[in-house]
Image (cartoon, rainbow over all chains, first blue to last red):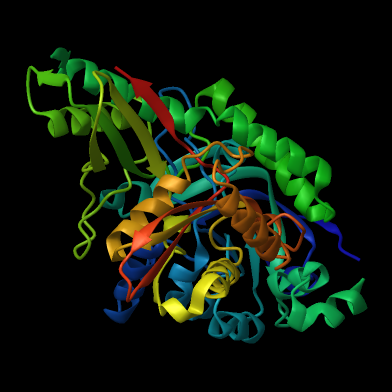
Length: 196
Length: 279
């Protein structure tokens, strides 16, 4: 039975081990943003033996490139971008102690295995709900790579940002299991019936 | 000849780009409302609820409905009795995009393909111009998101594969895309023409009002079949599992070479943005 959990980073192993696919997670506190361009910069810095602009230990990374804030507003629209573009960088980020990522769309088998290895979770936010999610963001500032514009690393302060656990520490995938329940295609018809 | 000044074109493109990003069309709103009623999956219904709330906030607060404000595709139907005055036609359109994305606080999402350096003003837009009879100029501004565009495909089938082959490619494309293009989606299918024409037909198919029937009964029946097949995949809203993966499947078809059967599948996320201006 899925549950609703409120989480504020820094997260511990115990925090993420308690999460299961389908659980609703309301994220509050400080989270960081990065898309593929910022991931590349971070991984390049590591390869060059340089210090990273953010300590990701216990943190949550949100895959988002917000639209510009109007004067007097905190941020523009800020929904998740498609996560697979970050897959090749993710095991490295998890090795640094990152505990959760927020995005949308499928992750690679390598990422799902790394989530088990490093005890971390992948959370889905609603893609295309950028205006709705912007209401959960109370403060935003660029903390690294300002030249990347919307792709810069932002530090966000959020309140009850709604997400759902897509991949947990047990290697499970909500996208796989959720679809099985509703699939009606000929080759898997029996399976669909069995699940209902 | 009826004259249209380029300044009018710039203004129309600018306004369409801004409103397209803030105000979801009535057809999409109705489709999302229907989805919230009809979806069997509880997490699917929650997604519909969030998307309706998102559309309300975007429109009221003038925040883009999605942070991906898109690459702007502009379809132009230029009446052959219209004379463009006061400057360069295509530059006028690009200027409209530039102004709209600046003044509307919209995200600039275009970059050099290899260096990835942002162009800074969301130009150049992709412009498709057709010369048509009459003395009007119709401009349709279509901001297209990257996530759903990335999941789109062109296939060059063997003619022997026929209708079954076409349906198979549409279903395969949607299945492989899974949760990535932000379902519930709209599926634009272009059949026939050439390699590049099929893709253009697929994109044009996305412009038809969601919920409106295809005027060609043969294509309407084909759309029904494809619609059923993609929704039987069970992907559901946001890929969490559910009955409604697609809000609509739209097909546009034209003759092709006797050796070919081109099929293009252009996937559009639920934030299907397009605004029209007639000058």
